[in-house]
Amino acid sequence: MHSSTLKKLFTSPIALAMLMGADFSQADTSTLLSVADATLFQANPNNNLGDGGTIMAGGRPKDGSLNKTRGVLRFDLSSLPENVLITSATLTLKVLDTPSPAVNSIFDVRRLLVSWGNEGIGSDRSGGGPAAFNQVTWNNRFFGGFTWSSPGGVSGVDFSSAVSASQNVAGNGTYNFSGANLLADVRGWYASPANNFGLMLMSESETVGRTVRRFGSREAGSFNGPSLNLQFTTVPEPGTFGLLGIGGALIGVVHWRRRKCRM
Image (cartoon, helix red, strand yellow):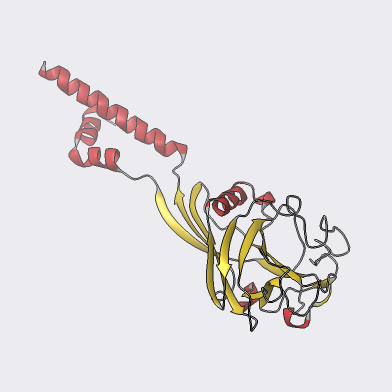
């Protein structure tokens, strides 16, 4: 390009405003639906419960000392563009069924540290069915293969000892889980997809009967199923910053030459 053309380009008010005031990032949002979810059922430890339209978590009223239920769920972040910075993450769960009378409690989600198997087709309503090979159960991450460190999973070994997000859950309705720890989990999954094992959902009062809730599963559809709502900013490629630097340098040179000519 001829020097006079460059001078006209980089000394025009429009070009200067574009270079100095341009926003090289793009804010966007994405809603991801769960790709797998299931219930771990202490009363039926070798059954798979993964296709009943709900996943359970909390203490059931009729199972005596074996009343704990926990949910596992996972999201696939591979549809996100490359070079993004995730700025916000919110997990949305919907309670579709509440016992009567009910006991309210705080529910936590914690990052899972190990993989788990297929969700299967057992219905939560009937207590599921005998697990098939590689399906997840209370006893096994992969039925017929890997077990949890202890039935139901162990804090600090199978799932994080740190709570990712918490929410007080009462009756039927929509509940949002968010916070710095959940955001860090999601960023980690985005950076290292091989470490994305999802989340464990559990009540802090899971030994108390009637704290159990039925949360919509992915089989319940996009309206009632779990969703992960993300906000992110697209970060420009390094080449973009290089172009900006070149443009800024040219502006500086032209400005210096103008001043010199006036002396």
